[in-house]
Amino acid sequence: MKTIGDFTIESIRNDFPILNQKINGKNLVYFDNAATTQKPTAVINSISDYYNNYNANIHRGIHTLAEKATAEYELTRTCIKDFLNAESNEQIIFTRGVTESINLVARSYGATFLKPNDEVIISTMEHHSNIVPWQMICEEKGAILRIIPINDKGEIIMSEFQNLLSNKTKIVSIVHVSNALGTINPIEEIIEKAHKVGAVVLIDGAQSVSHLEIDVQALDADFFVFSGHKLFCPTGIGVLYGKKEILEKMPPYQGGGEMIKDVSFEKTTYNELPYKFEAGTPNIADTIALRKGIEYLLRIGRKNTAAYENELLLYCTQKLSEYKEITFIGTAEKKVSVCSFIMQGIHPQDIGMILDSEGIAIRTGHHCTQPLMQRFNIPGTARASFAFYNTFEEIDKLYEGIKKVIRMTS
Ligand code: PLP
Image: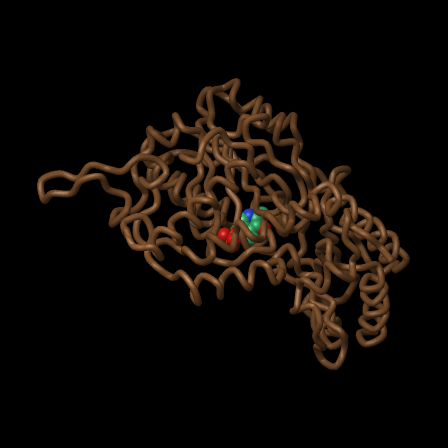
C-alpha cells in the first residue's frame, strides 16, 4: 500500500468524500486540481461547525459567540503568518482570492505610486488575473506594461527580463508556478534583480502554495498572494501578504465598516493594519476553514505530498509520451504536477468530453492564459493536474481514456 508521509493513500482518499463517487457509471478520476482542489472532511465539517455552533459577527461583539468566532478567525491569521513565515499578523490580509488580492495591490499601490511612463513588468505565462488589473491601472496612470518572453519549453528568458529592467520599472508581478504549464519560475532571482532597480515584486502563489514551501522573508517578496480553494480549502477566501512598510503607505482599497478608526461627516480616520484593508463583514466561516485545510496539509507534509505528486507527473509524462499524437505544452526543467498537452487533429474540448464519459475530469481550453496560448500558437490545451490524493492507477485510466479519444476521433 502506497504511503505519503505517515498516511496510506487509501486513508487520505477517505478524507475526501467527493472522490468516492461514480461519474457516467465510472469511478471519478479528478485531474482538475489546478482549477480547484477537493476539500477534506476537516474543512467541510469546520464550515458546518461554525454555522451550527458559533455563527456571530466578529471583532465588535462582547458576547460569547462573537468572542469565539473572532478568536477562531484571528487564529487563522496566525496560521497563515506561520505558513508563509511572515513577521507579523498585520501583514496578512484576507481577500476573496488571488484575483481580489492583485486588484487590491493594483488599485491601491498602483494607483498611488505609478506615474506616466513608469513600467510594470509581467510575463507571457500570466493568468488573466495577473494581466488585466495591471492593464487597467497602466491605462489609467499612463504607465507601460512590459512582457517577459518565454522559451519553447515554457520558461522565462531571464536575459530578456534583465533587458526590460530599468529605473522606470516600478512593479514586477510574476506567477510563481504556471497553471497552464506547471513551470516553476526562478522567483528568488526575479525578486533580487527587480529590487536592484528599486521595483516592488508581487508573486502570484495561486499554484505554488499547495506544492512548494513558501518563506516570504527568505524570498524577500513585497507581496505574495494565494487562494484557499487551490489549497484544499474553500472558495471565496484568499490572502494578500505584504511588507509592513509598504502596506502602511498604501491607501485603503474599499471603504466601509471595520476598516475605520473614527468616522464623522467631516473626516474619517482609518484602522490599523490589517483591518484597513478588510472593509465589511468578512467571509468568517471560510476563513476559519482555511486554517483547517492548511493544518490538514501540514499533517501530511508538503515535502511528502510534493514528492508524490512529482512521481505522478513523471509517470503520466512517460505513459502519455507513448502516444505519437501527443505533444506536451510546458516542458520546463522545473515543474509541478501539471501535464498540459495537445493532440494532432483533435480539439482539446473533444479530448475533455470523451474523457468525461470515462469519469475522468481534466480541464481543456486556454486556462485563463490566452496570451500564453497565442505564444504557442494554439487555441488551448488539455490539462491533467494532480494532487496527492490521485493515484498511479488513475493515470493508467487516463492512458486508456486517451486510447478511446484516438479511436473515436480517427
Ligand atoms: N493565478 C493563477 C496562476 C491561477 O491558476 C489562478 C486560478 O486559476 C488565479 C491566478 C486566479 O485565482 P482565483 O480565481 O482564485 O482568484
